[in-house]
Length: 242
Length: 361
Image (tube, rainbow over all chains, first blue to last red; front, top):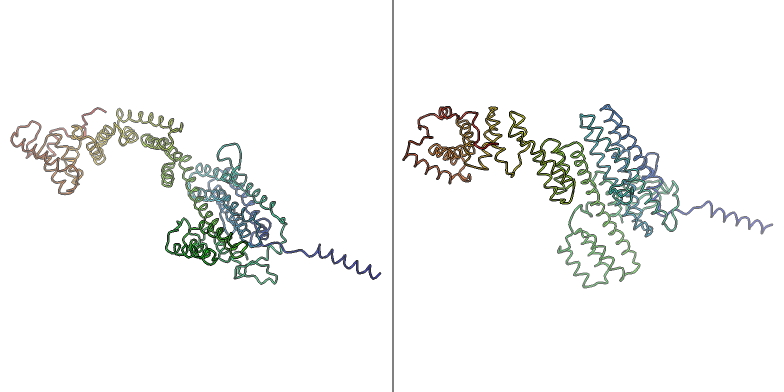
């Protein structure tokens, strides 16, 4: 009976150790999690890439709405909202969210526990975001033109261009007319960037696992530059993290 | 590490428009590598003297980074990997330096994105809205871009400015000789210019004047004829200043045309235009009309106002000779008496607003 009790205790302890106590993720994976899953500063605490994808959809919907408007004031309002969803920093517009996603993947690459895969892929990912950033810049410039325009025809034409750019930011484009959309980085949209990040994740060894929210929201950088989990909730010098 | 992470955070801020932080200290946007700087040279010498010294290698890497030579800094550290395998400090330094290289590429990409967006915006406005200012802005950034030149040509053609369109398409053709659309558009511009030229020569009033303006092509064989015709058309409409400007332009291209000379003299007879250019043109025109003494007076006045004006001296010599001849033989039929006021001369000689150049246009 005594032996059986000891065995039971050992079994329970082993189960508890395996199932209940989880090891913290690597710092690199937490940074990747900020791009993918969640970060406490964004709306609904969603990951930067997810926010960027949602904004891209929103911009397209607003731009399409603008093209259908026959009233200049209404058209301008829709375009202004599309421009805000593109370039606003405070409201995590597409450009800002995407840059932050690339940035956090770069944080991952420079973490001491980063895999070679992440180290090599991060600069490539950052480079490949450039076309989407360029379209965002162009949407901003065309938005200013529309705001200054007194012609409905001109404004509608430019809104049509914004809609095309917004669509390309979602699906990519076929810039070289070879019949393949988003086949190369200068044609990339969010769809291709998401696939690229999924590729980085799938190549990770040890495998990437969805990072628990506690780790996502409590990673802080100490004044000496070292990243740690803030177990006591003291905050820290995290330069943009918290 | 701290520096690196700070710089990456700054990178995000920078792309979003706020340029702060350590990134600026390390990756200078568009800065050139100064690998021959004295600091780099002395660090190189120190490492050459003790190649196995990690400290000397780090110092060289740091001076190379300061000199914006990020790639070379990475190579210097990579060379140390064979001598110091699995050295954690070297690995950390390499990671940081490689990150600076990618940061540099990122800056280049960002700059490129902003410039590309500006060009795209201007190209779009140029091609779809015929906005010529946008065409010119785009050309400032990419002066020999065939596509932009083609779009500007199209915008000019759409704005009924075939001569300028022709000129622009020619530039586009130089940039892309095999582009079939440029060739087609060039032919279209030439055809449209011929139509304008015909309206300029045969028409009248404002429409003819506009046609002349749209057909006017600097350096073309018919440039003189168009200027002269514009002078006449403006004169008919009592537009003295533009008429004189056109005649002066025609006279500069081909001095000695009697019709142009008559126009200039008629328009300057009142004496209201006393600037050097008008006086020189009047002198030149009077020379054409063999009125030596008057030509000499006008040319001397011009010289006193603008001594460096080209050709004046030669024309003055010519006028002096002519005046001397006329003094010796005062009964030259075309020369009025010196005492007759120029306005009366103008009336007597029919130097009216109907004066026409001698060439047919």
